[in-house]
Image (tube, rainbow, N blue to C red; front, side):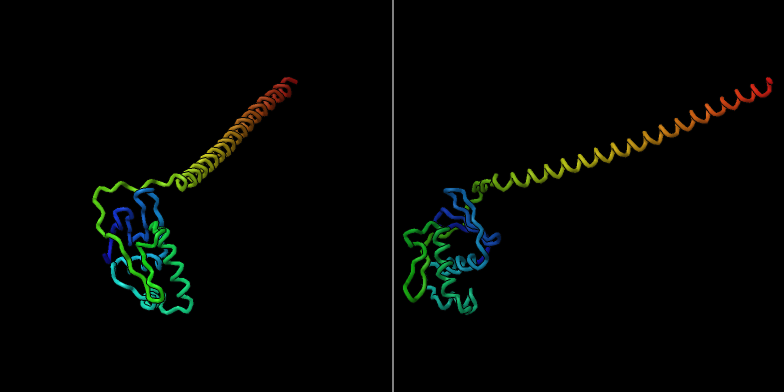
Length: 181
């Protein structure tokens, strides 16, 4: 199973391309770091065979000096992900390596979709809603200011026209008075 999606013990759906393991019983999806997914796939590919610690350390950790402890932690983490409390799926052969025991199959076409995590959707919805509200308030404020400037300009034009009219009436009145005298 070098590529794609496969099932372990008809319970866990492993998607190599997304580095995800989904537990069909709890419908919980866990993302694995690439190194853990590589280790899981190495064990799955060699199911029923002994995979030595040295081989794993060389293949996955590139002979990194702290790889022994890293391998121990990785195996422990994978056991938790696969609910392998009894250590029967990933069996340890002391000072030698590991043997992977599980039934491996392709998932059925019509598996139920993983449940959407509403806890991760809400913050996104709140953020989008908040940004939309801020945008609308900005547009409203800008429109009000623009409208206010337009109204102010219209008022100034009207006041100037009224002042000019009054001035011309005042001048006409003065002319009559001067001509009448």
